[in-house]
Length: 201
Image (cartoon, rainbow, N blue to C red; front, side):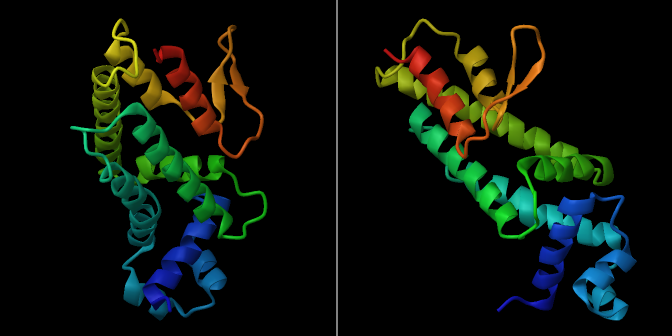
């Protein structure tokens, strides 16, 4: 059974996904939660405090959990593809569980952008996440080369950067225009596997 604090955080996550940070006031939250203002303020001192908890539960803890699964000394490219695919799928399932009609991964991305804007420490955290992700790919590629799975005439740093930058369903066309790939459930996995197959022995 969820605690009142967890319930508030979950419903606030739904509101922020739907309306963004600016579109959600304390009054909107109170009405959507169907709780008294005193109860809301008992658990969270203000709107920013609640928003930061939403980001902690639904963004930073998810990234931290999956990054924590990586042992850089032995991780390989297929391991990383699986770990990060699982992370993408976990986020998608979390969004689906809100039962918000038409909720997409872009709503989640928007939530992250708002976190950059309203939480001074979030940019530092995301810099850490990106750097850790990049370093994981560096080690994963190097370990795959040592195992003989991947060619040794590749630029590890460039490939690690490309793997780090792979998005779920976005690609850059030849004319530098953004292309949305077909709405597959596992585009991230497809994109990673395609790149992996290009460098395999």
